[in-house]
Image 1 (spheres, rainbow, N blue to C red):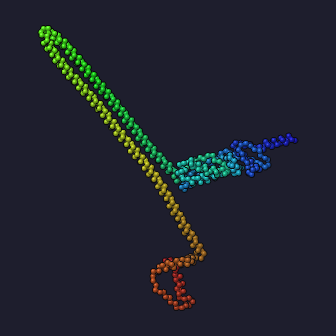
Image 2 (tube, one colour; image 1 turned 120 degrees about the horizontal axis):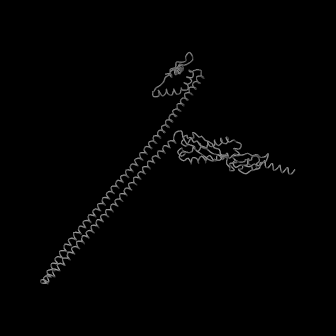
Length: 475
């Protein structure tokens, strides 16, 4: 018997113990204690007491909800369309699971979807109404965060959490967003034109700088070449002059030595033949004179050679200076050409940028005026239509009222008399205004006594006056 009871208890525990999968929430309801209507758990398991407790599961699978929002009013009272896709799921936090157990337990997937859709529609309209179209279109991340901040607390109230917001598109019925896009495209085109002009200017400056540096380097190399050639020619001329001078001096020295030897031989012969002293003196004098003549000729030749070398040196220096001046003139011409190209590029870039800006501003101004004109025309049409409808309603109600008066008093004549009595004070006021500037000294009424019908003449006069007023009004 004890074994049977133990086996029954174990079997009961096995059958009433419920495990919770990772993609579901186990909800125990009934007598769960702690003053709660339900106890929720994600993962693990729990024993479900028979009779006093029961259980159910909430699915944690994400729900994708398409929101085809159209005609939502923005802060500028412009209707926009914001089709979006929201992904929600039941939360796993304790408070959120408790709310889901209270609000969503037992509902189908479509019913949960409908509840979330209603909340999302309302929060999106509220968020859009607090923002301007330009801010919504320019900063969509901020717009999405605003929707999330407003939507998440509301979804948590029914046990849902927001997983993702995907805004498919943002459009408006009046074309305002399209106009903003055209404006941004025009600004981008204008900036691109400016950037292209700037790059072209930089390219032209770089080419001109490279050409200038190349011209300077070529001129410098040419100058060095000319200097080298000139120096080589000068050294060659000097060397040739020195060699020529040495040759002439050598020849003259050899000639002098030869003549001296001859003269010495002759002098010795004469000394031996004649008077040695006289012959020696005469020979010495002649030799001295010859030496002086040779020295004078040598000095003249040296001076001529030095003069020719100086002249060639001056000519070489003049050629070098001429080459330098020519290179500097070419460099100055290239520099002037580069400056002209830079200024022309700057002027053309500014002119193109101004032209693009003027065209874009004109198109934007024309579009703005067209939109304002359409808005004013729509407002005028609506105002005139409302006024016409109001006048028509006033006249219709007045006609219905007059018809009821005619039917109520028994005919148009009686109704006319009744209306005349209502306006008698106005007629009297207008009649008094007509004669208010006329001065009457006095008014005399003659009464001759009663008539046969018992009425006085004055009374009959007033009755006749009253009966004559309706025909007067027809005039």
